[in-house]
Length: 437
Image 1: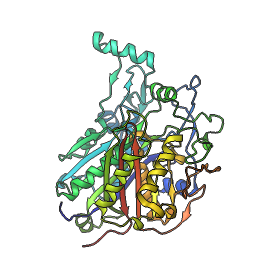
Image 2 (image 1 turned 90 degrees about the vertical axis):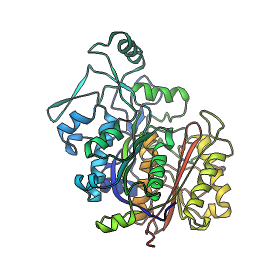
Image 3 (image 1 turned 60 degrees about the vertical axis):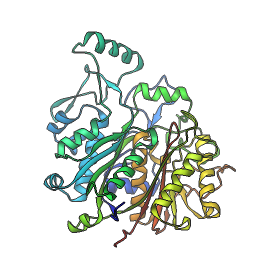
Image 4 (image 1 turned 30 degrees about the vertical axis):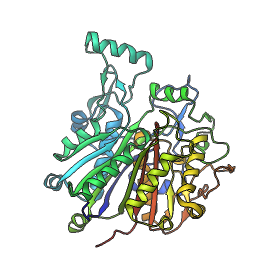
């Protein structure tokens, strides 16, 4: 592999705790929860009626009406395009430069729902389809029949799973690698990891990477309710997500998009780009154990962390912070704690660890990207994000989880974990100060 360094030069954030890096940073450092009652649809019949929605999301404020009409037709894709625009603006690179650069787009996401063609939404005076009209299960079944047998004007339409990546590439005239990774909760971390490898190998100089997702629609929320994996603290939404706490009762769905501009270091320096840190390690693995449950000993999680550390070429003691997968489910938090202790030994008790999901929920396919952004922003501004709602210790979760308040601390190297359904694991390692050599 070529000796090319990969730095982060642009941050694009559309999240439940802020749109744009400044609002996100403020609420992250203050430990402000983004969880509330679901407003995107009527969830009154469900056992979980709370989620972390993107509040005040107005694509018109970021994108033009023609872009919305031409390239997007569902809420998730609008989130992706908006975050991408913010990231490119932050990076200081214009459309012409992207067209002249060996550039790619690699994003992570989740399965896309069907959207109704019956409920238009207005944006900039133009009609777009389905921003709030995801289908429930009964409508979904009927719409499948409509599409197969009738093909009528009022039938629903499928949203392609690669819609975000491919429309971003079209929008900016990007002719390099363009693909979407669909690997559950590890998707956007893997997208970032594969983008990092592509730049290191010399195949690209710049990659738009990260993820976008929202499962806050009837079929998505109902499915996780049936699995019994979500919190039912409907009367206290902001206190619902409690990673590593003894009283935790599951995660809460979040939505949003996190886009990073990854760039080869010399290319970034030549154009005077801002640099938020360097990606120095990536490891991925599969548990090969269960289609839903993590390996009870954290075998895949251990492999991912070990591979990332080896790829980074660092000693265990150099890792100064871990942004945990930390879903607030009974199994995951105990298994991740066990895996961290297996990898780091006695050093595990000296590493501050936090779960950003306690603030902005579980973004599924976009989780890893937003959590890496939280890690980078914390490093850049010299603080460690907190794990909020931590009150009662669990004897099987006995590490330093940065409870309830962010911690002022300057660190150089951090690790971010993403462990997905089906045992798909991804670990990224970032360094605050890029290596110049």
